[in-house]
Image (cartoon, rainbow over all chains, first blue to last red):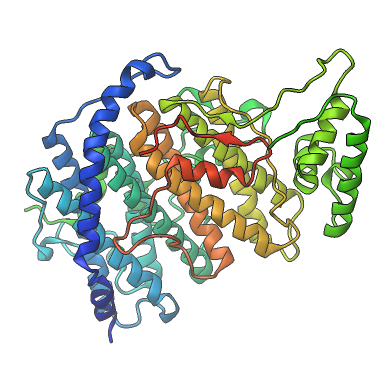
Length: 280
Length: 252
């Protein structure tokens, strides 16, 4: 059985599992609306500044389709990698298969929510996806990713560390739809786990000097095209609170930056994602 | 925890210390307060090994003559309501995490490898950053708790990592639920920044515990389950001397 067969077999998740999710979504939606209204008068007297936004359905659909675009690029990458013999060391087959399967599930979840909200899920012709990051040229900065495991890991790191930040930037943009917030939170932490795995393998298998977390805005690679996924990660002040040496504890600048992953707004996320698509 | 003790009750106090001595012998450990100057941790450890009675002994010992006769029953600390209560729940969780990493680095388990020490130290500092950030974010109105880490054997790699995995998975799951329970976007924005770090920790610990394992409780739909505040409070209380109550938190 080849790698893609494994993925397809694993991916044949009983559709009732997704239906159960939809049921839960229905429950949450009703409750969320009531909660927001009921909680406001009391919470208005709370410690915090009180920004509560309402987003239109169109905004939420747009957000979900943007995330779908990212996930479809990853799906194509995983499928192509699965066709390359010996790219992925056998010892890691299980984890990479699981990442690919979870990615398919994330696509299904996002599509289902878009449909439920009355929108049309984003689609892209797979032949228009350029996993080299060359806007369709086939010779982008990640052109070695399917011939070198090390380069494959670097690309996956960009898409998973960057993916975490891309989701993070959108969770607040759908804040009025609690069920969607929950669905995105549940995917967001899984992608962070994937990023941790990739970083671990880069350290353990390839020998890269890398930790499981992002330090400052270091991409931990010499591939400069990776940098967009890390810019803006140097923050050491959060909500106006300086984290360095906070309350007399020895928290240095590196730890302060590691402790918080920063969101990417949609325009920055698109600058990462769109290079993998031939938009002509 | 119920502490029906009175100031100056020498009998109870002695009994407490006596019980502590027995437990110390049984566990064959030297409590930190005998070996370190870190009073905060040592008291935690003391409560941990000795349990409620000895803890009460300490309270008695600290009583002064002018104190009122009765130490009020502490009971469970209520975490509060709405967004503020939810942020407070996360503050308590960060206190537990930071305490465990602090102790794990202070008294390394046998066979701790160099890179394990490096990562555990990094995670300690990140959790301290989270804890102190939330303390300030809550403007001093958060619930500062006393931890009780007696269920962890800090000399044992297996025990430390098993408990860390429980806590890290719980915290990730708690962030996932709290994300949708929060009303105000400012609060959501700040917790999402911490949530992915917790997931990085959970995966790192899972892999240390069981090489190749990164995805913990991720379900068949590729989603990481959430934990409602009521469940999170129950598990956090296992690591707390100051029990907390989430009865007034949003929980559906």
